[in-house]
Length: 389
Image (tube, rainbow, N blue to C red; front, side):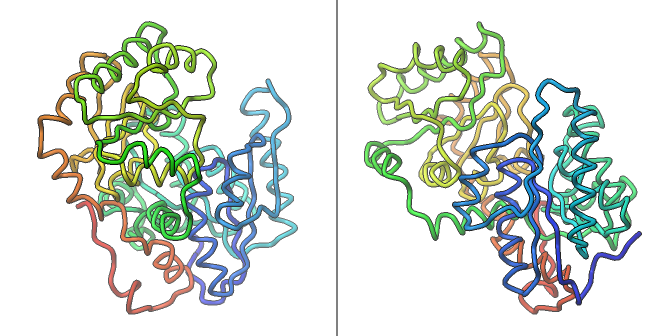
């Protein structure tokens, strides 16, 4: 195993494939640069306008953009081409360390390319496994492949650390640092005002309980989608002090269903998709969040906001165990029951309030930098994070 802790660390390369990966990396990039470490950012995947907006939000830029332009090609062909291009970047930049995050293809490609050149690799959010190698597919296998390659596992919680050790990772290679998405959350709320549209929405909500529908992709059949949206409408209709904000998904079919059911309701506002910063500001004032993709679970937990995950969206095990997140599945009756429990089960909101430090304390990036640079900061390195046992 190649040692990743290096007090003379001078250049780090990070691999980013999605917008949420950039959100999680942004605090790390800034923390490393603040300590004099050069950071080379590489984006992989198809050109994504949301990535451009996030780079602007965090004041960062990508030094290398390896977009895939071969639409319709098999995933293995695209991955092979990206691996070749990434290898060329590594040969040019010669980083001391490569950092990858999560369980997407970018993490696999980045760690494999670095391994082939003998470059140490560190993995953010290591150990967040919720099923077997095939569940979820293909992310379950991707995460395990990365875990066999990297030399440093940076887990968000003690539970993730235990999983990694049980799967064979050396105990001294696994470090609990917290979740850098929590760093990004607090930094965004402190430094960025909401956009004009969101400010108007906040004024509209004032004095009522907000149900925020987040990252709703309509991942069901047509009939199930219609009944799920109707269940959300009925939930709001049944409580005069409830209101709902529903950012519309990109799918024309799903937008049509949502618009037909909700457009004329006086306590529902439909919006175009929101960027990360505006979503965070709305989330911070929400009473309940509903999602069918599973995104923003750590953020909801950090803000003490109960969350419902519909369908088969990814579940953060710690968020579920702590009582912040409840899984409604794909059955509409289950969704109705869980929605109703948000009104009747006071313990749910109490549990959410107690789970604010579930995934981190806002200092994960600084703690990670201490580890990478071999520092012994009294604030971070000598006081290991202990969460979600």
